[in-house]
Length: 188
Ligand code: GLN
Image (tube, rainbow, N blue to C red; front, side, top):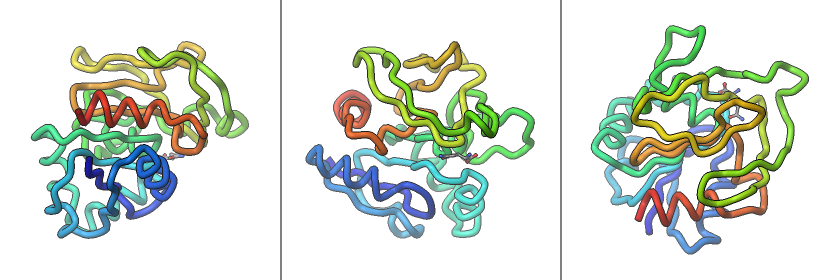
């Protein structure tokens, strides 16, 4: 399994380590020509969605990434990655990739609660550790998106066909189950 990891900014190295630990071949996507390499899946990491969105535009990669996802490329977005995939960001006019039928709220837990660890059930996996860092949550999912996990009544993981998103950072824990879920159930 070959997985391309968007490596413009943010926590991409941790995804690389976790996915290679699970036996995947990983490579970094840094420029348009990297998008032409064959891949079975793509990861959009956490970081800063405004910066990553700007870099995707400046490097002329936004439309290509969007088209690849629309054509069905299995894609896993964590945290800022979730925000980039959302079709709408609450209180904001900007849409980045906009391929997933979810509304995201950025920095949604306030300054004090911006970063915390917890353990909650994830559909089909069971309880998993969840690390939130200035995290978003999903305000609402459209009909095509399925809720996979909630935290205190807020949606923090969802799937829509080839797209999987988490508001938390499974790559920053030692639990590999969400990455396994991505490889085994979404990439197939
Ligand atoms: N707050 C960041 C944003 O809005 C997301 C934080 C993260 O990815 N850890 O993009």
